[in-house]
Length: 320
Ligand code: F6P
View (cartoon, rainbow, N blue to C red):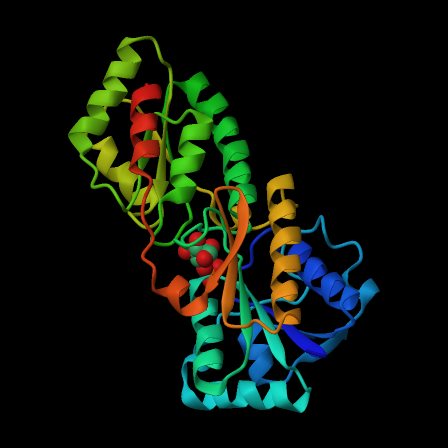
């Protein structure tokens, strides 16, 4: 393979830049040329293609966001959109494509493979950690660390005022950001889409903690359940303690990637290009049991995300 394309798609995630760097540098190592496609699939359809050299990816390993920019592209779900995307690839002599993104982005890659025979490799880049085939997605660790920083600050003020904080984190339909940031911050309660919540039980846990001398409570709620505002209104009807909502929002999508995300980015990007160099396409890369793996893209997108109930129970046992 002489020339490959690279794009980032869907919601950005810390570590995408580090992955771009790894892809470009590995490709150059193998003597391949790289074309960057700006603005994800939208840029592929609209022919926003730029050459990428060794120095195009200097000074980005530490930066959040994506240098190639990104977009959510509905047109990529249409026949015309896909045909236009393939035309751009052909025009630039791009023989294989690396797609950094989440579930929706992988579906776009899958259809380029399935319907047009374009070899694609997917790198899981999303803060949501909602892909079953990989233990971690790029950006999840940094996003959780950002949430922790904010929850630590909330704990200070909540304790001073003896309040309850309801903190909303992202994750779309997946509760992993809430689960991990809840456990790691010492939150008393997490509310996730995967487990039905019981308001009486939540109030009982709060009262029990107060009776044992606690001066504040943190409840981390995943956006897939309801907003912090809505939950606060419900909870306030059931408790005399004062409750305050906080939505972390897009802050958790930005920032310099953590060591864990930079390491994943380096390995995912490197593996993706190694595969293309071996003539292997139609795969996604990931990490399982601390090993970098690759898997058939069709199989990966058909897997349903499972929730770690053992971790959820751990929180129930140790946070009180
Ligand atoms: O997929 C990443 C994510 O941040 C989700 O957690 C969230 O639901 C969504 O994207 C928000 O999307 P947007 O930035 O387009 O509003």
